[in-house]
Image (cartoon, rainbow, N blue to C red; front, side, top):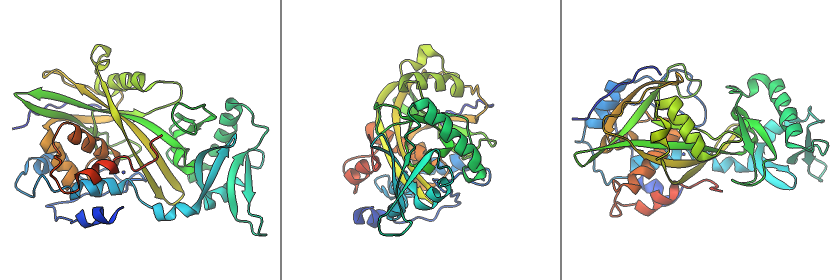
Length: 356
């Protein structure tokens, strides 16, 4: 029986397609991976734990449920031709939908829209006006454009993401988090698997997002996760998020271990998500109880790793990108075995995006 503790408050190859044999679940909840759901998730802990503990359905070596989760974060690549390069200082920093670029034409003091030479008005690429020379000038100017676009970019967070050609390279400007997919910039985040070992068995702490969260309300999540904003390192961000989301003191969170990264690319409408998530593991004391400090998590449960795997394989209860990070954990901790058909294909698919 799983140890249960509650702390209230608070991303295709033919081979993969052949593996996608769908199963009929006793109940199902499904959300889009690119756009926030319109309503609170329609399931509770009882539903999740019922699926988690049902070991009688299916073979653990069947990876099709995992492949579905990867595919749900890597949609729409056939629409890539609808996007054009977003160039700053001769470097490609993003991709903008041709339709969205038309909405930027009016802001001629900020953007330069380069059209084709064939007499048509077809957009070839988008760049910034040369008068915007500094990162600060660009950040302010584009921020004003985003304000003017209003509801075209929903869910404004007032949180800035650095815009670079790749991780660790110069920052050309900073962009409102909610606008990142509309400009197709690379967005980076940190996700941490918090786990416990008891009697030779591993358990994962799982959070359930607050029903009032702006994105994916009520869905399952990692113990700690967050976007990587401008001006903070991955490790410091993990430490900060540990305290805010789970009440984990610095004395514990400094032991979080960097274990790699996953990536995915997802196109839906004007949105082109190019995300890289840096993954961390933190082994916690058996008696540790998380306590949310920022109101973004409703509750937590500590469940055996195989039970968490069942939820990933059989439902859409987890926030979509969390599935990929948990699958990565399952590989690294030996819960997915090389003898399983599709093992290497699934392993490679966890880095389907531009991991740079």
